[in-house]
Image (tube, rainbow, N blue to C red; front, side, top):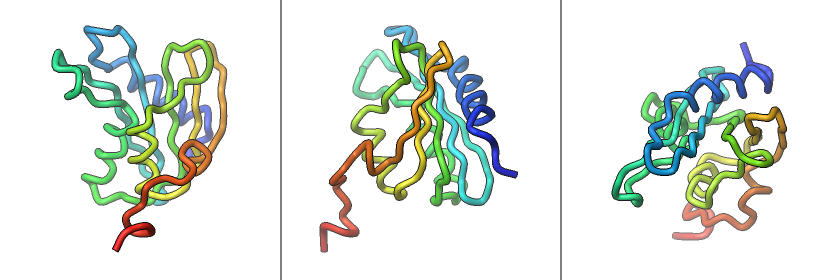
Length: 132
């Protein structure tokens, strides 16, 4: 059964509490719903070698892919930001690899914005489309 946007946001909020962010204290949670109705969550994981850190959105998507899920319906992302949190460029590119699906952005104050992958990253690089 498909989750409502609020239920998916709640799953992202629960994932955010598991974030490992000892350097920035900036915790992010994500929950992705697959076309088959499965939910995968992720949190950001920092590393003292900052380039090795991983964002919540990519953790959730990679968990889904590692279980054979590559078709996504929507993803919710939550953080303690002034307005609804916005994914970084790397996360936008990873999302675009799996199509144009709904993206729900939220913050701890309950502010919510709805968008899509294509709107977040117009003209995304796509080797399947742009390459050989």
